[in-house]
Length: 143
Length: 307
Image 1 (spheres, rainbow over the protein chains, first blue to last red):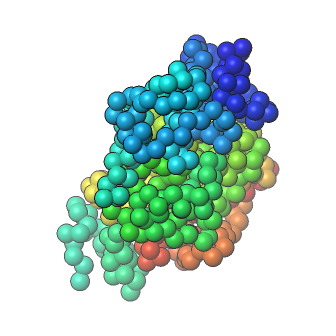
Image 2: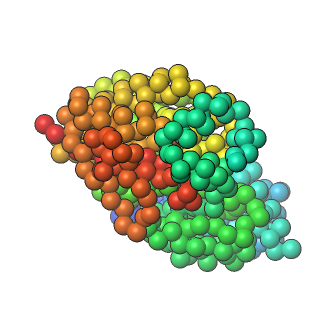
């Protein structure tokens, strides 16, 4: 749990935002859900809630997007930087070090990692594909 | 004169059936059935306000968005060239591409934050995610899905939407174990999907009276199960995207005769729709969306569980 809260604190999410939610650890990481879900009978292999932070301390892009309004540690990128991130996986960008939420025009794009100088994209492949298709549409509209 | 080619491999029996059922409205029915619909989206109000999203989509893609007044968090899209499901905003889960009529069942169910809600046939998750936003991501939803193939789409949509209040169960909705714990149940059942003929010929290919009869039995089973799992006083909404009375009014009349439920009138403010086909016990209380309402066809009934 220490690692979970470190990630939450590092991202600048006020802990009270997660008040009333159930945070549960598993082999994959920490999952958040609502207490009412416990009242629903469980069956083998069912799935519930949202995987928020992986065992390594890396936040999932789905979690960051869901709580984007509460995240302080965001890195705003412009169109050129977003293009570079989605095609090369990284871009030179000065920012606070650690896990971050990358945003473009206030759209929560997903998880990134910054060493202070280089910003790396840390999103699942399928997610990158979907974002790239969206970016291509946006670029086509601008022409 | 109907241009049968537009309807794909639909058999003559389909046309005869609706000519008999609708009389002088049949031509209008066939004409509108294959007319393309205005694309529409539902805003994920858990992540963004409708105004903010409209501003972004108009600025980024040059679309024109017109508010769907009776929903409050949906828009019709105009001036679109791109696939509305391929934008940055969509990938970020800020909206869901959904036919407006498919938003009605959740509006009628009217779930509240903190409640327990059953969605008995959940994939691909359009209505489950709408339940999430209506419940402000609180309370609990059991999203049941019988198809292993479709459940992956449901998972992805729930993650994209940012749902934390859903438990997903893979299994037959007719065999969900447990007591009557749910405050509300959504029974949006598998159906012959006649309203989607303009989208896919698969609907036309598999259409037959035998298939409809088979579906009707399945629908009754799912409705029975949902009623059993809903608390006395709880609400059950039954819906389909087909026009067949055997899958609609006849299922509701059967439930009224055989199960512990009462019927409640379906009301949606400012929505233009018809009541049920005449001659059934439920006719005056249910809602039918026909193709001439310029939405995908839908049938919606509201029931209340009694002791």
